[in-house]
Amino acid sequence: MIEYEALLRLQDIDLQLMRYSRQLKAMPQQKKIAALDAAKRKLAGQLTKIVGQRKDAEIDVADSEAEHAHLLEVREEVRAKLNASETGYREISSFEAQLTSLAKKLEKVEFRHTDKMAALEKAQKAEKNARDLEAKLDEERVALEASFKQDSADIMAEVRKLAAERKQVVADLDGETLAAYERAAKRFDGLAVERLHGNVPSVCRVKLQPGLYGDLKKGPSIAECPYCHRMLVTEEVAE
Ligand SMILES: [Zn+2]
Image 1 (cartoon, helix red, strand yellow):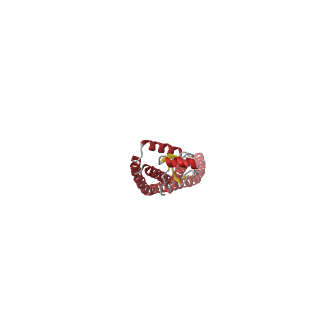
Image 2: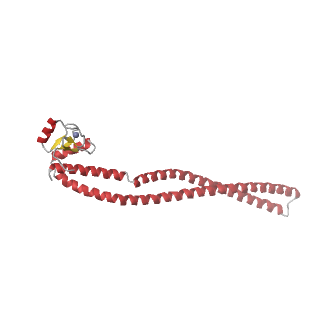
Image 3: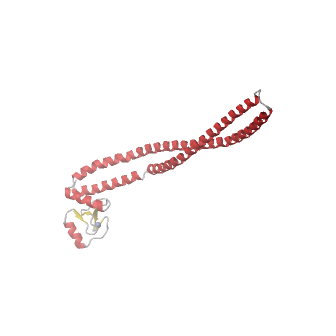
């Protein structure tokens, strides 16, 4: 390949590679995966809170069950004493008063227990919902990753093809031209080479003064644009 043709091809390949790179970054799956990860982080924070609430509710229920069991035991003891044959009248009325008081306490504990059970069920339900949502988000992420891999596989195949061609094209350039290209590519964000269309460079589009134009036409086929300092291919090249 003639060197200036190789240079122009190299420029096209690199611009295409840049486009593919942007395309990969902008693929809808990437944005969705990022949004999904944000949702997962938020959910993880909520879940920690919900699990804490559920554990507290469990402790509350266990406490109230223990209190209830204790009151029942005490009631049995008092009843046994009340029914003992040697119990006197005075003691009987004391035991009956104790039983009345125990019945009130039991009623109170049972009433509160209903509320505590309701709170526990609510917390368990919230936890289940959060865990279901977590599983759903995980599932979606797996699907998005698979879809990204599939869609990017087409682009990646093109990228590999271009990379192989790039090696061949680079072999047709001498070291100095390649170094100049790399410097210009860095400086001009990839758009390193322009070509002369008539007396107008294709990128900066500043019309060349007749003197400059004459000098460039007499010089080498790869020159430097006197205005923007990109590499300038002075041969007429078909688009
Ligand atoms: Zn220029």
